[in-house]
Length: 139
Image (cartoon, rainbow, N blue to C red; front, side):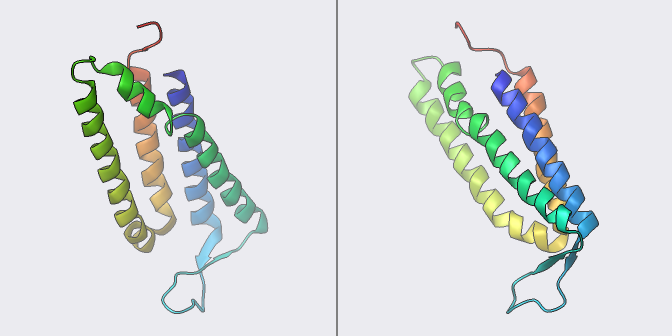
């Protein structure tokens, strides 16, 4: 549980920093290539901050919400219902992944780098959820 909490806090910080740096220092390119959105960085350091924030997000996801959610789901259900419940949580995860993949390009097109504030808000909700969930160690 504590790993999920720290993971979501780190992901919230990374998303917020990416959104802030993108809004302050990224501008749409004058000459985008064939339908592709292109961005120009007005501050070289801001580009590095955005890149490091993306790596920091992946790092936090990799030690927390990536693997631990699957373990947590396996531990909270009674053995009699575990297989069916894990199936339901897996379907919910895949539907969530599909929705993120479908809506991210639209969000980036319409609200641009504020998209990362939306993702950060969901990560913050994950932090609240992680603090609320009961500890399963020793159960």
